Amino acid sequence: MAEFFKNIPKIKYEGPSSDNPLAFKFYDPDRVIMGKTMKEHFKFSMAWWHTLCAAGTDMFGVGTADKSFGAEVGTMEHAKAKVDAGFEFMDKLGIEYFCFHDVDLVPEADTIAETNKRLDEITDYIKEKMDATGKKLLWGTANLFSNPRYMNGAGSTNSADVYAFAAAQVKKALDLTVKLGGKGYVFWGGREGYETLLNTNMKLELDNIARLMKMAVDYGRSIGFDGDFYIEPKPKEPTKHQYDFDAATAIGFLKEYGLDKDFKLNIEANHATLAGHTFQHELRVSAIHGMLGSIDANQGDLLLGWDTDEFPFDVYEATMCMYEVLKAGGLKNGGFNFDAKNRRASYTPEDMFYGFILGMDTFALGLIKAAALIEDGRIDKFVEDRYASFNSGIGAKIVKGETNLVELAEYAEKLGAPELPSSGRQEYLQSIINSILFG
Ligand code: XLS
Ligand code: NI
Ligand code: NI
Image 1 (cartoon, rainbow, N blue to C red):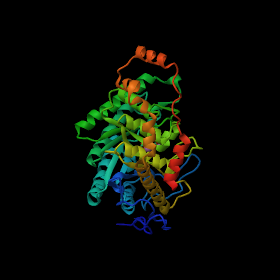
Image 2 (cartoon, rainbow, N blue to C red; image 1 turned 180 degrees about the vertical axis):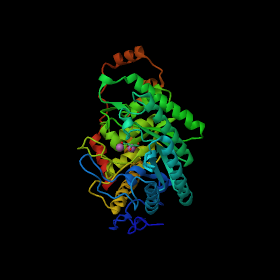
Image 3 (cartoon, rainbow, N blue to C red; image 1 turned 135 degrees about the horizontal axis):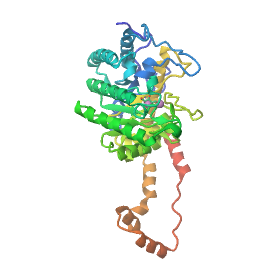
């Protein structure tokens, strides 16, 4: 079989002092951190769409990268070449997982029956490769946003026929996820949102989205899907107002419609910042509700108002992310999917590797530093002490739900006035982070 990345060797760990651009400086798969190897901590995943499909097109220009892999784009031959290239790419990087949308795998045909035939064929081929290499599917999903029929969304569309078509795609994508042994199925909102309320029945749209998810759960469970369904929140883009705005909104939605037992969240860093939150905030909100499912590992640009999906390089962010993940006891069925793409001007095959090396090293550093933060203990201790007033006396009564407004009012009257709460010491804590990161 043709080798697609001819000049690229298997990427190895060479340590921080290596200046080999095609080596890991921090990601050492066998290094043990807090009882698990790095490889066990991270189920790193390749996003089929960015890695094998996206060629750098933007609103003002065509692609800059050649992702034909020696075949004519838009053919089944090309679809197969992408599989070959993808498996070679994962192998060379030591990545064990991948994620896909249905139409990332094959060119969409005129009818769903024909598209499904193509999907069957390509997934037979993918399955062969998976069996031969041990690579695994992290999660599958259906693209319910690119085709013009989804201009008004899928679950949120005004057309019942389009809704039915979307349901057919979800059904097939679930079949494929099960066929390939995936433990996750993602609903990213796509165009589930609106531009103006002047033409929108918000209640019907939300109810219908929930109905689609409920049908997906029923069908998925009926064919043996025992993994997690995920909502991937995002506040805007492509629609002005996306319904799954952020983690808290998505959790409220899932609880409102009784979907919270089957769904968790897939948190993407760039979507968090678009929502005006830190990545860590979104992870914490998910974790405290027991809904931290999986992670789309990327990074946005705070000076830009859209989803730039960059490879993560911010070690501070990655550290706080891994702090949340470690505190939550790790991701169960989920992993770290690089929903990330090279900048348009980084268009060569080497750049594809540099992107992943950067992302994997950044997260490895994040893990090392987050473990150091936890082992150092000062931050955790500080937070614990900060709330110590709830451990005894009136505080303990509040926490146990053993008091009421009358008793608290009497207590307050006796007090006259409380002392100021203890100092938040933010600057002191931030300096601890710096000494852990750079000390
Ligand atoms: C787009 C989303 C998308 C999902 C999968 O912004 O991040 O790529 O991860 O549909
Ligand atoms: Ni994503
Ligand atoms: Ni994104």
